[in-house]
Image 1: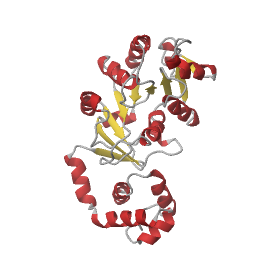
Image 2: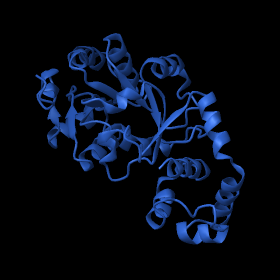
Image 3: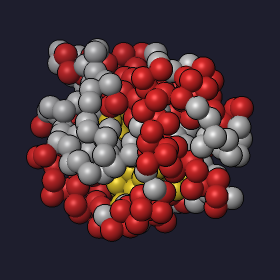
Image 4: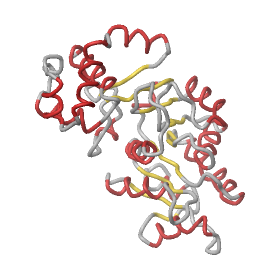
Length: 292
């Protein structure tokens, strides 16, 4: 198993963390035993890649030393858990497209807790919403619910900070590799979570932040938890992507109502119209977790 784990880590690095590319290879070679014997054209044909991309992967597999790679991760204090490991998050493993590898910094015990809630919303929260979140999250944290969010500005940052201030535990899911702090304004929070909580990403450490990666990582935010709480979102908010993913994954969706005159609450109010559980008090969430 260790050899397969190492081969997966090596392939993940050389394939730039491409989920679908690795899945295609794994379907035909579950032990990943043939990756080093394949030629560039064979890789291109089997994985349906452009010849240039396949040639790059072949070159990286031949030149990147797995032992040196693991030593580099250890030097940077970057850990990882693969989908083959017992410590892989239970709820995340159940989704349609779970990450092959999660790179992380921090407390890996947070992967194996009982209750999780993902909190998402606008990057520009109103004062009202911030005040309501301050009331709703602490009772959940007292029940040992781990709060998951995405380390963005706005609601994400509030969710992490309220959790930390309330003595709880939080997981931040990144849309880039651990070599990058994004956004820079959250650098202090990034370091605090890395030290006392948990930073997680499916992207190899060298992966710079790019726009398309953030919607992709949203499936991890929703997939880690039993439920997703949408706090404030307009009709075009990326948070609605996360709530849609939660529904596809068979998870609960909660929403905090906002003023009907405020466009920033249009998305959350519509979610409630469509069947999301309306949250007025912490107990509205605790009831669903059988913790009230």
